[in-house]
Image 1 (tube, rainbow, N blue to C red):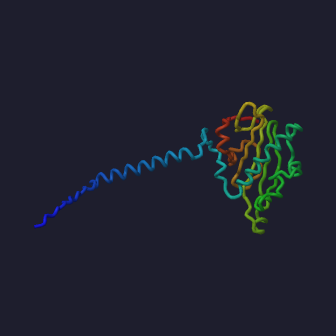
Image 2: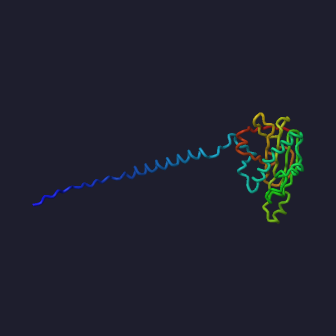
Image 3: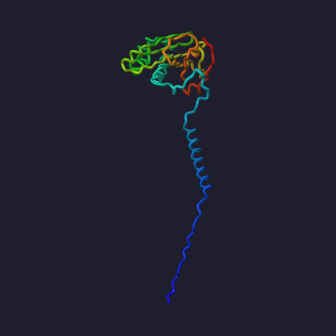
Length: 220
């Protein structure tokens, strides 16, 4: 009679986690994911302005159509204008800026929808306004262009000259000039007096509000 060695195999059955524990564990994992995503957003998201935005201000990122192009052109013209003022003690006229081929006063390098802008110069004792509006909207539309139906003012203030128009930003003490760009959603004529009372919006960037404090000056 043959003897056989029989090896018994035992089957071990592991009971699954209870359904409640599975739900809790999954919820914890999801919460961790959202927490990490939120921390990452805080790290990479642009910082909001430290100073609260005034009712008469509009962020540059909210400009529409071709308004950002004209806004950046006006910003780029500020240094040339202030250099001329310091050298000659007079604000440069529109004709001088056009002779220098300085956009947007010289429209050769602007998109078709911005070439109908005409510019005027208005100045006070401590500041200058370069006002522009599109007077050729109807003609440009007939030509198939997309004209910008806004009005703009580039205001440059000499902070060493005395009183200032309302409002203005006071930056570092060594800064002599401060520049503002105002936009009106319609084509309107230039008018004297505070712009905030006539539907104009001061275009500001994050840096403008962080680096300077808005002064509620009545000025000249």
